[in-house]
Image (cartoon, rainbow, N blue to C red; front, side, top):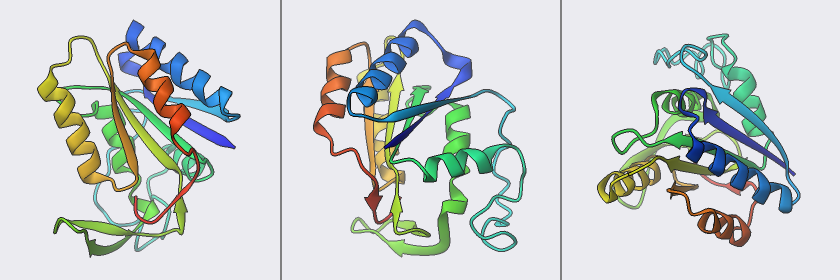
Length: 186
């Protein structure tokens, strides 16, 4: 079983190192081979919205900047974990950029969700289970709630967590979850 952890290179605080160690240990205990990738500013180009990943090279981004390798590692993993500082209730810019560049893994068609919103339909039968874990010192309740709400609103099969130093809480989630690929939408 494979796990891929993506983190923001520009926000590696003591809390990040604690979280990274906790997640890595939990995955190792569950028998996962884990690979890490740190993303810094200017390593990955922002999505241009050119739709080349749907028209010119279906399933592949037309920009050749390393994101194709990241997408391949993600799609070949059973679990993908994003570790992101919470900035004004949102992901960091670097993590948001990686998430936006998942577009080739979806189809250009929209489907309606039960709440009336729309989402792109799935390109593949299964996807890696995804965890997006926000962290930071002194995160307000409002920012924590906004982070979880926005994360879940834009992804269907995702676990959104906020880490503020409680390793047991993270450990319990990874022990209780059925860690495997998921079917359906992203």
